[in-house]
Image (tube, rainbow, N blue to C red; front, side):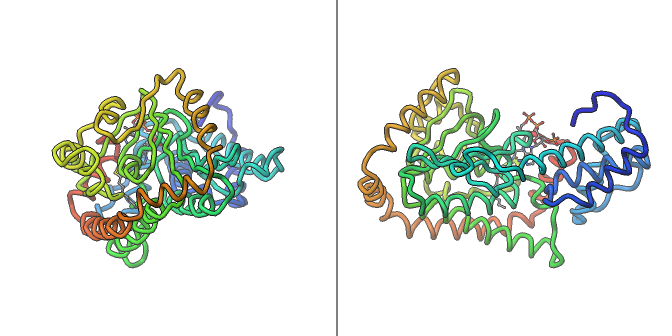
Length: 364
Ligand SMILES: CCCCC/C=C/C(=O)SCCNC(=O)CCNC(=O)[C@H](O)C(C)(C)COP(=O)(O)OP(=O)(O)OC[C@H]1O[C@@H](n2cnc3c(N)ncnc32)[C@H](O)[C@@H]1OP(=O)(O)O
């Protein structure tokens, strides 16, 4: 949020509050938290209320969002609130206007840009300010995009990220949105969603290519074992910090990684959270090829355009021959990983790690 000049009046602030009520599209949890925090700071000043308990996740997230603003002056908070609302209203106006070439760009995704061109459907994670962390809504959007791509007339499908990151993994604020049934219900719902999400990768029928434009974390790394080809910029890194987060592996990585790189190398990544460079990941077989970042996009897309012209049925059948014998096993592994994670999400180790991140005490 840009706070160029601090001149928002009380009237501007009140207008902005009214505009928030009129927003047509839900701006998502983190924007709502930011709005809440700026509102509180602008009207009450620095956060001085007691910190909510560790299990009161919603109020804890609100408290964290407010508290992180520290001693930000009330006027600056008011200006930032007005700027944020103005950016929300202008983006909703521009997204409701018809765009030229919209036939090739699939509309309706909040955090993805999906395009189909030259026989390639490109699904781009589009949440660069959060390093493409996957929110609950994004899990559903990615599933929908994959299901749609599996039936469209493209020959190959690509997943990539917008901005400097490929994906920073699961959005750690996903667990602040606790339903009436409490943490148990949240863990159960998350496990079901994760199982469906990973299932979409296991069952994807066409060649699936990851264009890893920058660092990848958590589920952004583990699912790579389910892609057919993985191209990486030399700026990419591969990090699965499950130990640090009190978690266990997902995305079928407990099976695919030992198979790809051998159990000893897989254990270093999945148990101890060793971060690999792109060249190390390539040497371990997780990445197909690494390109210098300066020529990454040009080289990769030239190659993919050539691949997309190959006979589509032959590519599908070849993928089936390579992958189908493993499918049943992969679904079983996915189910077991989700069962274990459901327990992990309710553990103190995991809850404390997420809270540390949310209160800015921990980073990878
Ligand atoms: C429900 C199904 C679950 C499936 C199981 C999946 C498990 C996983 O994926 S485990 C991995 C989870 N990811 C992480 O632990 C990464 C956490 N992020 C970080 O450590 C860092 O943000 C970073 C190393 C990725 C980037 O650091 P830096 O370059 O210094 O940038 P910032 O930290 O300032 O990030 C900018 C902005 O983005 C927010 N953000 C980044 N990653 C996440 C995330 N995973 N979840 C939520 N938010 C994230 C970060 O908080 C910053 O936000 P603002 O402070 O509002 O600007």
